[in-house]
Amino acid sequence: MEILIRRLNSQDVQELQTISIETFKETFEADNSEEHMVDYLRTAYDLDKLTAELNNRDSYFYFAETKDGTAGYLKLNKLDAQSEDMGSDALEVERIYVRSAFHRQGIGKVLMKKAYDVAVEKEKSKVWLGVWEHNHKARAFYEAQGFVKTGEHVFMMGDDAQTDYIYEKTL
Image (tube, rainbow, N blue to C red; front, side):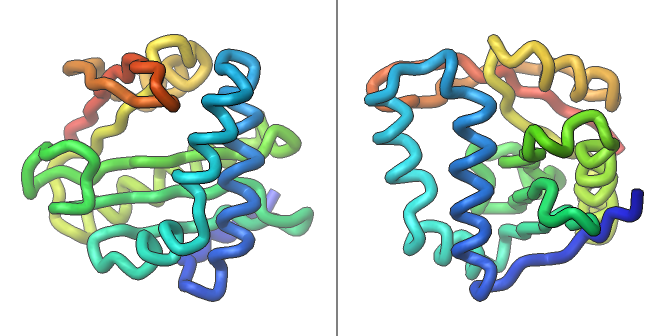
């Protein structure tokens, strides 16, 4: 399957919002209250907020596209755009989501390779991310990619403080 990786611009904000909500719900809806999901989705994927993120010079968004449509997306952050201060030598993978219809087709690996390529291009020595402690499927994927757990931080889902594990990979 041919997978095209395309960098987003502000004209892509509607599609980004759609795929963000869809993939977040697919991943986390069963494990969180409806109230927390509605609140989180409304604030995290607000069009103005997404537009500001797209226009941030230290954030990079990419779609993975196939002949069957947009399969997933990737959001990377450097410097002050990172959700944690991991240093100037780090690139954060803040979001990497693949639509369920495209699971097990190598999309995640292609998106992760793009993250590594951007890290090298931006002269970063490590890539890091936060992953929910109960997202065993994602944790297994990251561990298979060579990431190691180095810490944890709190992720707020509404008023529910959840634990994300910090995973890092040295390039």
